[in-house]
Image 1: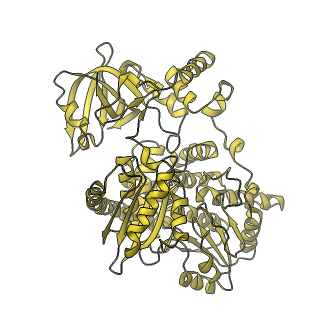
Image 2: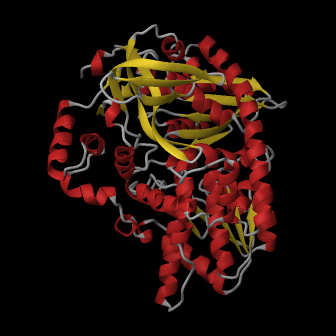
Image 3: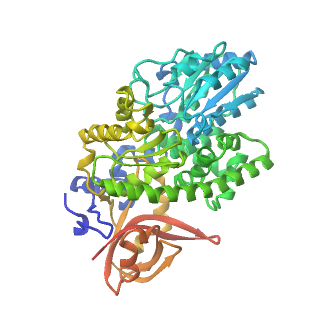
Length: 581
């Protein structure tokens, strides 16, 4: 594999990797057969799209891609029990996790039940006082006043808590990694149960809830009844899929595509209020779900009241929606400040241990459990290593969160540590996991985890390569091209946005924006100039080198986007890296 444009170490220390000779051939063949532009064909070739499948890929139909809900174990039983509760007007409680996937899953059920004229009770545990998932006191309390408790985005490993729900039926709609045995309850619908095929392992919890509602709708139609409009609820499924970093492939891609269209209609009062406080001034994209809406909904569970997000997503009262959206926006700002303080401390600690170990980790007293996951994410991005960040309380109990890199299964290793008694508890999935550890077990637990991850190759990774789809000239970067590239989206986990290199360009203008961002205008000297924005440019040598370019020419790399400013739209490059030409 050759270094693309001969860049073996860019200004951020990365090697540039372009498409293989085979992929270039495929892209050229696609361009000839379909008459689509080469940059789009390069993106399609990377996604493995064959010429005959191009039309279906660019216009994915949900009805062609949606799996039969009954392929998931316990699904028929779950939908039947759910409908029995609806017909008998039973009292239903929804027990949800405190993140976006939990909040949207709860909102789906609450909205559906309300449209059927049935109120339901929302219960979301407090992250600090109760921790993740069902707990015995909460389940006992809910069982006293309810006939059916539905656990969403949690519950697969909650044997004792579910057993405590005496007198009520419990069902679980989840996607977290299952253990050897399942809790005793009516149904556990989970594509990541150990006895599942794994074909639907990429679904988030909201998609599992959606499939249960699809099956419920099917059962109702067979009896001549009609349920609520499920297509109108896809905005919630899209939000959960992107915010939970589920891979945007197969049905997930279709769910997000369709959900973005629903969200653009601005019919859900809570999301409309949240979009407005987030200053989202253009049609929603997967970026706006992941970076504008998702973090604000999460802020409630991280540092505020755990149920704010689910309440916002399910409310029908415009005044309540406005108040909740403003509160979440404020909490998100507060969360950022807490996160920055923890991140700075964690980075110093991790650097002292060495950033090239198989596991990068940090632990501190009083670190807010609501931000350790985000800080773990930042450490992972900075080092291209699995990362764990843990906050200890006064009693020496540490609550931590981890994020992994592609090809390294963190959830399974954490579960193994819990089974070996090094953790109080722990679980998750391949890319993200949570854990509870006592202070005296911290060092041995992290050492053992590091060994397990090293066996998966986590210590052999260099700085992550920058993968590029091809080269472009600034003059080719048009709004039409961006619209065509968007048709191959949405982009996100397992489907990165296309990234192009602009070779041998002159910098005409470079100005620092805020503390660490950089605005640039560049051209190849032949065609028009192109604007670029580089976020966090001054966190690496990239910013200083471009700001003080001294007339040098550069190869620039990044993703194209439409910049909307003051009602006008223009093409800009979201600059990610550069190398001297």
